Length: 275
Image (tube, rainbow, N blue to C red; front, side, top):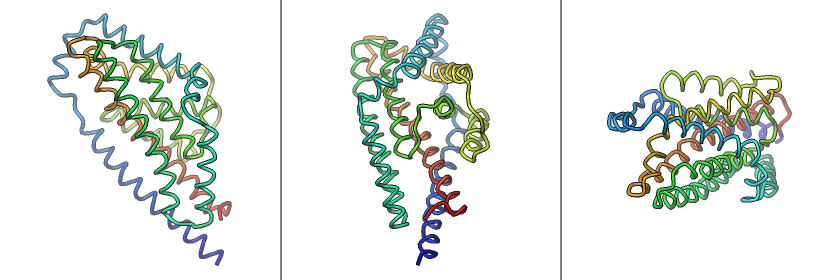
């Protein structure tokens, strides 16, 4: 009976990993074939260089303020301990039942949290856009974005307090925004991390460097939306970019955390540390 349950557990994990791989293939196709529309390029060319520079500085400051100092504030918007307990219950259910349904409930919890945060950033972005508020919105947007990723991490059993995990989160965020070969290279690095090939600790300086790279990518890609959001007459259009980018980033982050969780779970089964 024990052997049959162990086999069932391993099979359930492997089937879920196959689903992850199919979803990864879809993201890969979208990233490598994505091109910036001509109309967007034309409009971006009209944005003053000073505005572009200020936006990048704003993103860097927002990431630094929220990521380095704002974890406590973010945790006041949800209940981390409750999320940890929910994960423990879901994982115990899988240990007892050894079926895909139990694994899917963990995923379901993560997606439900994402839908709630998506609604928040939609209302916030469009609401501030209606008043022509662009740059100040960046701090709020980054805060909701990190809240979403922190919840996803916890719902798959990973704490986000260590510098190594912070680096991983920033790398996830950067990769989700990239295109073409840059996306492929960064995605490969993420998968090496998930496979356990990234060892050692990360210094504060390394996290800071990655923070700046991530902020730069966000600033470059969101430049047009945030510029438009600062225009009273068209701010709502710019603010609508918030839910678009939230979904883009969290889709990638949730998939990679799910893959990481399942990969670790499978390794435990193979090594005999599981059921």
